[in-house]
Image (cartoon, rainbow, N blue to C red; front, side):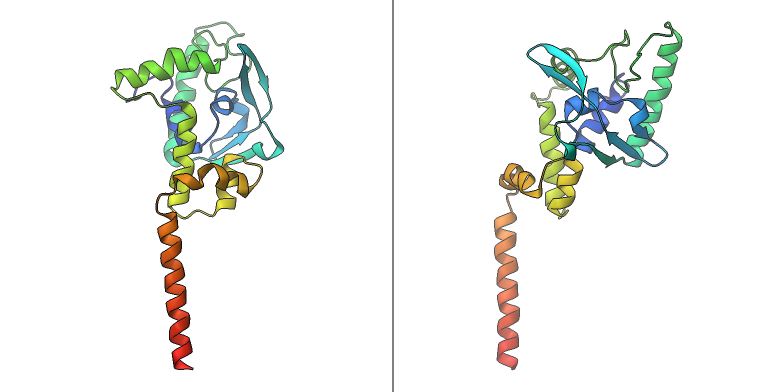
Length: 199
């Protein structure tokens, strides 16, 4: 639904990296290593009470390296090429912060402006219900958990302070977890019972 959109790359990496919206809007080109397929979370666009500023991630754990898939790298390379064309049409002061995603004037997005002017219209045009940007982060974590990715790895990817934080937020979105745990317990007990009978 975002194919050809000027922010197509943003709509790719927001759900696939699990980053906060502010981390993506505050992303600078210097924090990307496309050859290695890495996104370094070292800055974030803060937007509280209508006041906006470029800051650092919330906690030391939030400063992290997020791997990029080949599709994300390709999308970001295309975006860089398109942005270069736009930059050449403006003065040297366009996009002075080297933001990966900025307005047509080269200024930073506020989170509220992004949601109002870009995110919501895109969903409406596609006939989809409203999805909060942070819901992409929940989807990302859910897929990792469902795929069996260790919690400490998900914690590192999402920038949580500890694995317990990750579990406290996302344990309830694992509908089959209790059944899986119960079945695993039954298998373990059955295996042990078999060993007992053979002894």
